[in-house]
Each structure stands twice: as structure tokens, then as C-alpha cells.
Length: 461
Image (cartoon, rainbow, N blue to C red; front, side):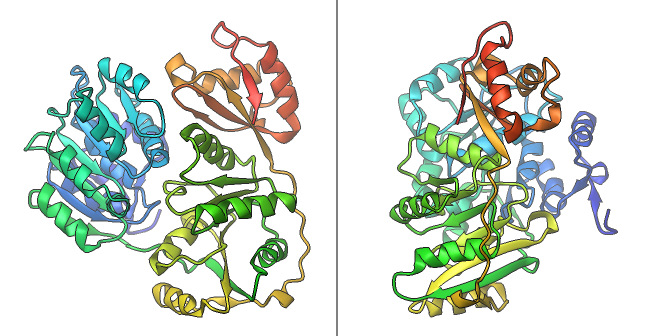
């Protein structure tokens, strides 16, 4: 622990039950945004916080939301707005972990991209906390299938991205359906003028907290690879072989580029998955989870589609195309080299885009390492991904839990628990990562097994 670190036990306002649960989850030392914001939010004040993705802000707003709840009242008391379903799902999962000390607490994800019918049915049974996207929340308000007049805490997560996506009016409309005396917590990675306007309209004398507003890129090795003519695809493959890339997020600026690059990488032998807004939500969920579980080499994505993507120990970020905004570049490469680890960022640049290089170097305060294509001599061939993702046809709504999946796979003792990686349980489907060497055996075993007394269909994805 660093000398300047703040322990959660040093912060006033945390209940003993919350402290105990945080300790069990392995959270003892608060991050910078948590130690700065929790005294403000736990005191009931409005908060405007500027903090980067990955800084621990979910705990920073999740703790005060949970501590204010009355679990005996099955009305919506906490509302958290996020720009994408992926981020909303991630936030809800973290809140469920934080809320383990409060039995019978219901947290619902209400987002677009999926049928509204099951959401209406779920809302009829009540919920304490809603995590959702502004468009779908507004749909439910219009249909009068959601009531927000008992919301005492409104959270705007990644507010800058929601405003970029055109949700400003929807956010104001939604806030108008909540209590006038509610607490509002706004978190944003950047602080554009429209954030100031939104906070003026929605908040009461907010305290402003700013922690490191951009990602620290000092421990990320950044390389710039120039190319000319139509050799972008060839240069991409050369770079991946030279730097021995086994797992990477490849960023593109358009959906068409995502499709094209996915095809190029697959033809070269990489297990590549393309992610963009035209896909159905269940396809996006599956792609995102497969990559996070380590059963694919590459995720090729646009910035909006990758919002909320959080992968531990991501080896590399590749900019197939440099973004138009240099601040977006910093957010992209910040997905590699998390928690002080070494990271790798590779960017391709045409001879007509040198002005973007200057903008990026000014933004990061670092010169990018220039590597000419003729200098890249590596011929690395990637190993097959370490895990295989298995998909279960039931999920949280069917009372399926991670422990049930682990128990079924390890039941006869032939497959060790260490062979099971990340398990993600969604409302109606679940995914488990199984070490590649045990994947086929696990699938055969599950096809003959009963989980919670019933047969559940399992397939390899």
C-alpha cells in the first residue's frame, strides 16, 4: 500500500455491512476518484466528477446509491444512465457484487437493442435500481411502464459520451420524471461545454472533483507505422507478426472498415470478431463476451461499439485508422497497460495523415516511435486462443448462477476447476470460458448432465 493511499475503513459514512462486503471482494484501498468523491456523495451532495474510464468510478457512485436504498420498498430508488448496453450490463454486474450484503435487492438492466416486452414484465414485478440507456428509459416513460417519482439518486455515467451520442434532451426529459430533491452524480472523462450546461440544468450546487483526466500513457509503448498507397492491410498484418500480437482490440473509424479488417484478419489465420452498431444486441453481447473470455485473438470495433469494453491484461491496442480527435486516441490506447502494467499501442498512418500524428503527440506529450514497414521482420504466427466459450441456453432469470456451471463442469473430477476461466451470466443466456484442452470433454459432459435438476442446452461458440 502506498503512503498516500486511503483505506475504505478510513472513510466516514460507510456502513459496517458495506465495509465487510468490500473487504470480502478484495477492495481495501480506495482509488483516487473513490477517496475524493465518496465523502461528498455519502454526505448527500450533488457531484460533478471528471475521471477516466477504469478509474474505479462504478464503486464511487455505486456505494452511495446502495446505502440510500430502502430494500423493503420495491420502487425504483436509484437510476443510472449509461451510453451503451455493454457499459450498463457491466455496471449492473458490479453493483450486484457490491450489493451482496443486502438480500432480495433487484437491479434491472433496461436498454435498447432487445425486445421491450420482457422488460415491461420485469418492471411490473418492481426493481430497486435501474441501469439503462436514455433512449429505452424514455420509451418506458412514454409507455408508462416505468415510474421514477421515487428516485432519490440519479447517476449519469460517461456523460460526455451520452451527449456525443445526442442524448442531451432525453437525459433532461428523464430527470424531469424524478424527485426534485434527488441527489445527482455526474461522471465524465472529459469536460466539454455541454457538460457544464447539463449540470447547470440538473444539479444543485454540485461539488466539482477532478482526478487524472486523461490516461497515463507513460507505460504504454506506442509505435507509429507509416504506409503508402493501398498497403494498409498488408502493413497491419506485418505489424501484428512483428510485435507477436496474440490478443488485440483493433479500432476502425467506420463500420465498413470493421467488416473489411475482420475479413482480412480471418483470411490471415486470426480468430477475429467484428463489433459495430448494426449487429443485433445478442450478437454484440456474444462477441464482447467471447473476446473478454480469451476465446478470440482480435476484436475489431468502432469507438461507440467498444464503449465500456474492459478486458484484463489486454496485450495491444491497434489503430487501423487514427481517430479524428486526439483525445479519443488516448482513451483507445488506455485499454492496454491497465493497473500500471506494460501496454502496447500500434497505429497505422498514411503519408497524407501526418497532421494527426502531431495532434496525438501534443495530446500525450510523447513522441511516437516511428517504425518503417521494411524494419518489421518478425514472422510470428499466433497460437490458438487459450479458451473456448461455451454458451448455456439459460441465464439469471432461470436462477442459473456461476457456481452451478462450475459444479456441472467439475462434477466427475476429470476437469479441474483451474480449467474454467471467466463466467458471464446474462438474463437469458450464460457463457463460460473453458481451457481449450478441456473444452470438448466439458461439452460432452454438459450434454449428458443436469443442472439444477434440468437439462440445459450447451453449445460451443
